[in-house]
Image (cartoon, rainbow, N blue to C red):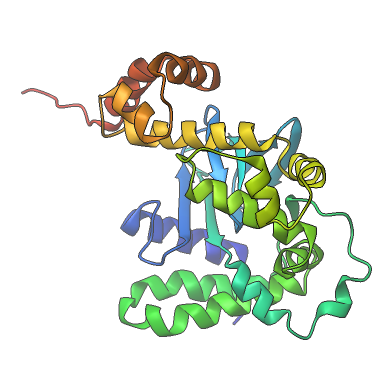
Length: 299
């Protein structure tokens, strides 16, 4: 029996109730919301997101990407974005899943597929398309596998490979195939964005990133900004500040958080944070912690 979008919605809802956002399967995240949201700032990693109920709007720079029930979004490289859940209610909550994509798996599956890149379109780091019906079954099996933790280590990699294979052979294949080619511009920029993500607190030298991407500095700068809408320095700043906000959930030492993410000046950290999030880090962190703390009703 073929899984449907309704089946996926029921599975996402049930597994979210059981596990919350982060599931026991590394890289599989679930989302649920009963109302439209405010602005969400996030860093998308290479991943495939499917909305099974409701709708969301993601902005990459000034470019909007709207995706609703029955549509998927592919993020081909690490990207700082802003997003909003735009359709959700108590009766019909927003439901979505996001599955991280391993570029090495893409490269392995591409070993005999290089000729299909001859007519590939210009690289687009984010793309939205209708969900391929052939993906419903493996996605449903992956979600159902959370009920059998003893099987995850063996069966999950096989299902993930099936999903990536379906993506490579579907409407998003041209974009994903470019990421799997080690010598393509897309893969080179992906290596650079991944490096900045993993070393966000370290001093950044654009020349080193260009060498990592095997490009000249002018060529690297041009391709990097075309893919991310940001310069490398702006990209690093956004990664740093996103990490700072995450750290502030569990820490009140604003200066310590600033130093931890690579800022030497507390005042500069505060200015940059305020500019991005609309409030100074101390006040914003306190508001986030208060929102996450359940209210205690006295008898």
